[in-house]
Image (cartoon, rainbow over all chains, first blue to last red; front, side, top):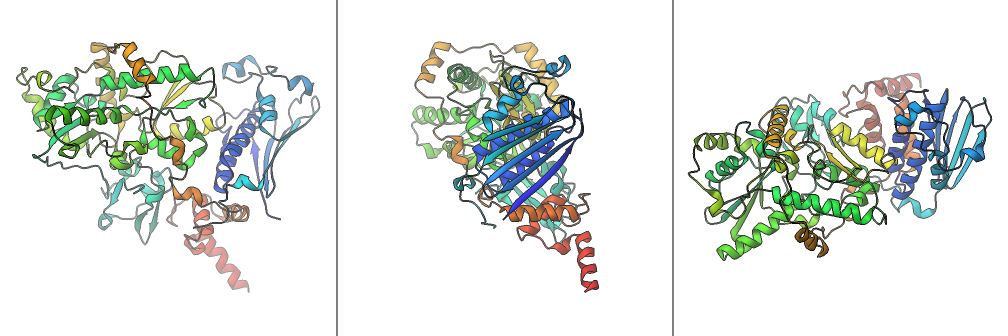
Length: 152
Length: 432
């Protein structure tokens, strides 16, 4: 079965390059003709996830897999972990430092946004053990806009 | 036709590939030591014009303009023109253009104010209800609209559905001239004097209801020498255009300011505004809008030229000088509102400001949008990229290794065009 896999290393606190993995994922999905609304959802989730790993984590990794029926985003890091996942899922809850808030982050909407925009969100985390966020998006037959395979 | 904004005079082309590297949509390749342009990917930004050392690439905006004396000729002045003359009053610039032989000169400043009114109203009406997607994107820069249609179609609905001032005015001028001179529309020729190479095709300017609004476009650089000559000769008000010309509004600094990055949003009464200029910054910004970074913003002004329209490829003077001139004009004249809001509100309520065609109708404007790759092809590209040198040397004729890999997979280039792949493939053959 056709599957497209790509992975990126994320550097902790590297704000110059933060977001590039998400942009590259976005461009890739556009090229294979994924429906715009779905690309937008994946892009939002990818960016939130990537920024979280860059801001809070160490040795982050960002993987995407595209199958004929689903897209999986798998973002993990070896950072401080999330103490209380249920609490972290609340809108407006954030552990971002004052510095990050000044940069415009830390509105406490990251995880809730990811939950809203993905079809399924799984978080594995333990305090001090890092965090792994896996988001799934199902690809219905219509979500490739009948554009597949017509190479010019 | 899509994308015919520039012409390549290939006899002078040395195949240096400057344009290939500069093109933001990767629409140019070198084949057989000459540039090959793919108009179906061209957004008319003019980056290639700026970098070509041989002058091979020409804008299709006209540089010569014999006026047809049998017609009534009107010139719409891009606000950027005022920024080109540091020691001249905007009204004298209008006089000078009139001396070139135009029957009417048209200043945009009232229509800019009207447009800005409509932006404020549209934000106010839709912000709470969220009926329109936010952040709204300015419809002013035609290159931005095409960049969105080509690269960010998810954002087409964010484009503000208000007609651009030059279009509002072109329609107005044609109607008024018909009744003043008692002539038909075809006896009028409307020119647009512009810094923008992407306005070469008045038929395809941005939104389709602009068709026919402007007949001919001329680059500022083409008329600059002649305007300079006339400007020097205007000592007194020997030619009082305001008595004879209904469109030569007395310009304030709203127009000049408009041509500078931020000049569109600065006069607006709103908090959530951003202005971004320069191709690189604009592309970056569009990517971020798509990722939801600017969801809290109301309206974003995007101009692909550095410093805004006064940095357009068809301007005549240095853009930093032009910016300085604008600042001087703003200090002198200010940007006061001059139109009664209740009248504008009436027009707004009647739907007068709104474009008939939604930008989202441009989804399939670029045929490349319809040529999606399969997942297997995409994986093939990834595999190929891992074999390539990754230094983007450009010897193969593509701007970078990834684009070359795409070309190979799409059947537009041969593996052997890359020296590294040629080496790998030769070794394989040698081993078998």
